[in-house]
Length: 93
Image (cartoon, rainbow, N blue to C red; front, side):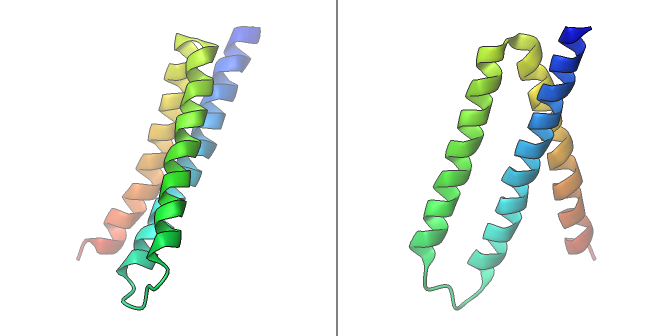
């Protein structure tokens, strides 16, 4: 029973990490689209921090085992589908 709770926890952590990753991507793209962006270097640092944070979270999942990695990735993909799906609805005429 403990293993199931571990997998559910990893899926939840993946969902939170995915929501942070793709939510910050959405915010970052909106900032880059603005024509008055003078702090592009700050946006580049935010982008690098996003990648580093997701890499660290994936490394944590990898060290926890294959099942935990799959559960974590499932959480990330579900968060991606929810957040990117909303963008598609906003953009589609």
